[in-house]
Image (cartoon, rainbow, N blue to C red):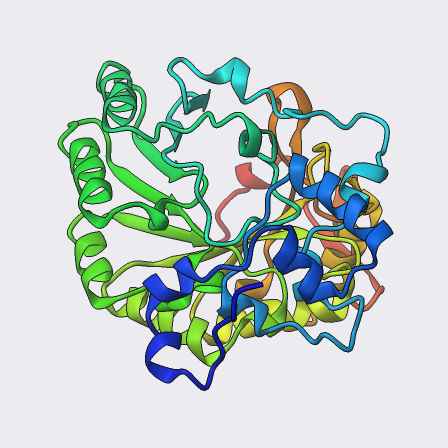
Length: 376
């Protein structure tokens, strides 16, 4: 196994290109990391033959190797559960993304927005990825010609006002190519907003350079949705990366996936959301883990997510509370799941339960909006 980078190599450690080129991948590297036995090597060979892996030295350094259930390790190190554990209803493409691709790599499910998968490359291949199918059969528009087929489609679709650029991870693309691609969308009159989905601030924060921020700022209004799943991912490096983007005028939101053994507790989600607010990243979505083949060992009961959101209400500020959603199978789109404080609406009053469990009656007589002025 090749020698891995370490934090002591300060010049190399902060160089995102060296981080990327020194990613840990391959069976030999995995065997060295996990000290696999000969029988275990065969199992892990089967796993990575189906679902590739790569981890940056930076993200690998966040793992506590004394803890076999470390939440960072679970997100980036292959696990036999990916091929040995399955639940009813799992599919390669449960969200029917292929069925909503008018051109390869472009998903058009909602009338006013599209999602462009512009690359199949990631700095770290998250074990809970909902597009694991694309690791074997890439669907992204990786060539300039493929990318501009997406641009042509959007140019001919006047109802589309927002383009979400995803992948893979768009921030692994060559800077000039990404700049040209964003510029092409910005030149379409009916495209009002661009959004980028990326995990780079979390897994390769040194990629957020001044040059990158300057380029992105040239395409505002542009939003970035990133992907913190655990409070330990909020490090000085990831905080600095987010700060660079914010100073460039790019607002940040976060999409967390609820993952068994990683963040499926009120305490972890609460600490994550507080930490994100502290670094000015808005908790946006808490996604229920999709029913994707190869990720079933991460799936929790929906009631667990509702319980967590219920536990947040009244305990932390509203800006800290994400929307808990499930992406419905068959292309049904996102469905919001929130515990309701409203218990009943009667003729003259509504009945609520407070965050402390108290019952409160709120006057709301029928026709209240047609009341008369007092002392006209």
